[in-house]
Image (cartoon, rainbow, N blue to C red; front, side, top):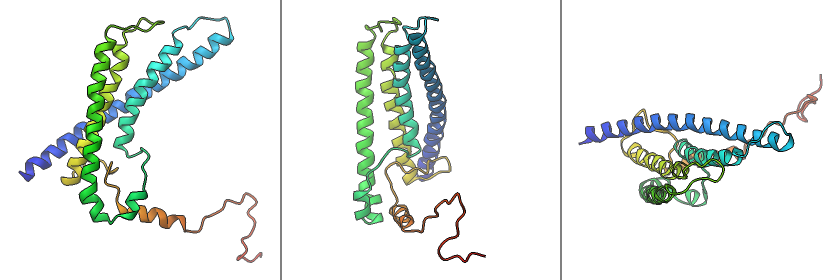
Length: 209
């Protein structure tokens, strides 16, 4: 049974890594498209060289996809903001063994709710089109369930990685914030800070030759 779960953890984490690389590449493409559309909109408004009435919708729809794909990639890399107030007050073992599973289940439930609601948006968007591009809103709303599914997969991968660690797993620890790392961060705050001095003046405790 342990070998099966280890193989499952390895497979799910490999799949997650592959999908996150694809999401990152797509996110970069949408970011480039959004910037080009925004710049084109500014140029078209300030000059009479060309008309670009679709630019606002292109930028807005690209941002929707970028936000959902970027959220999934950021979750995999542990780049979302977190509040450490509760973590700092709890022992490491108590937090990781009891609180982390609850947090993971809450996150998974929330992301699955996004998937379900996103599918509803897609169904309603199938009968709507954008004013400027006549683009079915289905393709815009599709970003919601796909982004939610990717984030849910991240949580499942994290749950398997916590219990059956593999070399393909993420080191971000989506929910399992290690208390020792928090203490290291706090200790670093008390460390002496090197101040950059462009004039290279001698420090008070240094003797001038």
